[in-house]
Amino acid sequence: MGPAGPTGPAGIPGPADTITIRFTNTAEPGTPASVVDVAGSPNHVLDFTIPRGETGVTGATGATGATGVGATGATGPTGPTGPTGPTGATGATGTGATGAAGATGPTGPTGPTGPTGATGATGTGATGAAGATGATGPTGPTGPTGATGATGTGATGAAGATGATGPTGPTGPTGATGATGATGTGATGAAGATGATGPTGPTGPTGATGATGAEGAEGAAGAEGPVGPTGATGETGPTGADGEPATITIGNVFTGDPGTPAEVVNTGTDRDVILDITIPRGEPGGGGTLDVLATVDTSPQPTNPGGSLIFNDNPLISGNSITHTAGSPDVFINTDGVYQATFHGTVSVDTGTSIPGSIDVQMNLNGVPVSGATATHTFASTNEAATVSFSMPFRVTGAPQSLTVVAQQAGFTFQDAALTVVRLGD
Image (cartoon, rainbow, N blue to C red; front, side):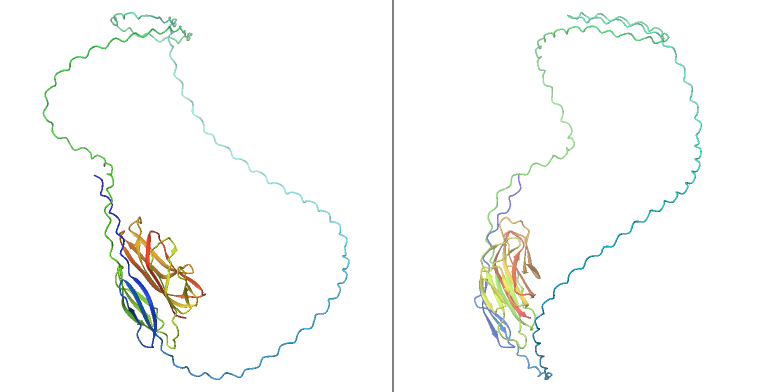
């Protein structure tokens, strides 16, 4: 029997919660920051309240500066340059006579060659005498070879009876070897015709079957045979039930010290998200408009390796330091300074993606990854959906610069993606 068929595809994940930022209010200095969810699950509508920084004390009056010295008057214009005088004539080039070359001196005599030393004598050992060769006995004479008779054709006569073997005579002495006679070659006779095959005799009757012998002892077990071929794949199982929808709940909202980074921490699970938010108090002597941008996209977005996620709605833009065009992947930072970016999104596995499989998402600034602004999730089943998120402060110099959120692998789908960017200060 073949193995059981694979488990059928998982049901479609339930819809995830959505988050919309409605208002951002500025409170009096010293009051706590707060985030109020006025709608609740599954379509959250958030109102942020962020306190203004305390007014700073007036600094002491500085000492009076030294009396300034007036600037020196401008220098009068330079008079025109006079005309250039004519160039004088070039003098003739002098040529002195070249002296004759001196005679070449004679070559000195070659010194005598030293005498060659005598060559030493080469020693030669005496060669031993060769042993004597034994004498060869005389060879007896060979009788002449008879002529080869012609090959007869026709029927072969019956063979005569074999006579009795006579006694072996004594071996005579070997005579001297005679000259080899010429080899005679007789003509080959024609081959005789093949006789006809006789008829096959009749088959004799089959004998009676003998009695069955006693059963022998059981033999030893034979070697294990080869593994049979794999059976056909079973039918695909039924489609699983729809997954439970993810939820997002706002947990605690904390007020941080001035200059500390804003922070969003998921204290729940990937499916039941609980967000604790820390918002820093404004710097003393601050005030004015907070630079913040929130952009979202609730539509499904299949991932491409190295492809940027798109955000099609801007529920909140405050100030001019951060801008975004709806339907674009690029958020532009227009002023140098320190910023905080917070991203979260729900991601599911596409049909056909190998399991286990991982998705990596990161934030790039002008195409360069921002250190620490990354999130990874490994899926153990095809019907799994997860929320991935990161929150990271970063510095921008040389504005304007483009901010993007990039998925590194294909085979997954993002939904309910949200990106919030806040300017923290210089």
